[in-house]
Length: 132
Picture 1 (cartoon, rainbow, N blue to C red):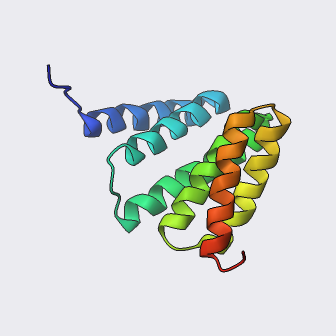
Picture 2 (cartoon, helix red, strand yellow):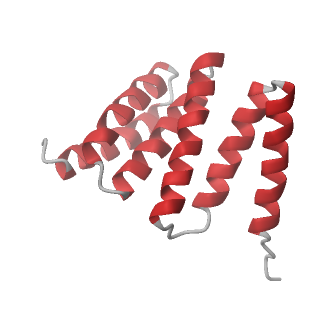
C-alpha cells in the first residue's frame, strides 16, 4: 500500500499550531512545533537554498528556546541540524562551533553513540573547512 504524504497540509497544521503556541506563550509546544516544521522541510529530500535557509532559521529559533528552557538534549540535536544546513550551503567554518557544542552537550548527557556520530561529522567538517 502506497504511503500518502500531504506535506503541504501537514505544514499548514504546524503553522496553525505555531500561531496558537505563540499566542498562548507555550514555549515547549512552540519548540516541538518548530522542530517538526524543520523535520518536515528536511523530509522533502533535496532542498533548494531557500528551503535550507528556512530550515536553518527554524532550527536556530528552536535552539534559542531550548537554551531558555534548559532543554539540553533537544538543544544538541538542533545544533547538529543547524551544522548540517551550514555545511549544505558551504559554511563549514560556521558549522564547527555548532558541532563542538552539540558534542559537549550529548557527551554530558551520556549519549555515547550520538556523540561519536557528531564527532565524525565534526572531523569531516574540519577537513572540509581546511582545518585538519
